[in-house]
Length: 148
Ligand SMILES: [Cu+2]
Image 1 (cartoon, rainbow, N blue to C red):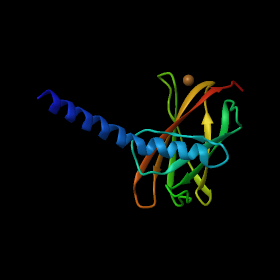
Image 2: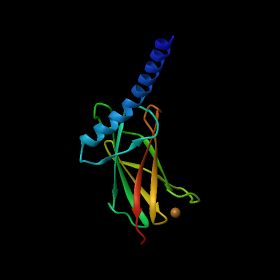
Image 3: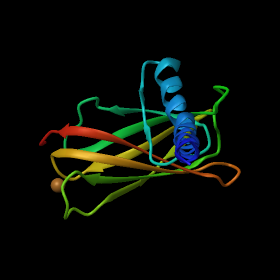
């Protein structure tokens, strides 16, 4: 009896680890892949695409910054024709979220203007709809936005 329940537990743990392996691997691949850009953390397991992000200016101030995204599939090919919206929230409660839509500027490259309305730490949520309708959500942090 003990052995059996132990086996069940092992299978369960394995399943959970395996489900999380794919997005974790995608992030690692993104880090090793190109430009040394930052990989975004997956919000939930999703199609194995990688999203790298860069923000300009690198150290943003209150006002408009640009978010640059590069989408690649598991084979490293650019993901084109994705619809991407950004939702930016501050790390403290009570702030109105800031939204922006990204435009595709090249194969798998997307840019969005983002309005930082206050100095401090922000979390950027990426809502992506892939060409086949699959949804991917990622998030990354932009810390220490400076006062203008
Ligand atoms: Cu705030």
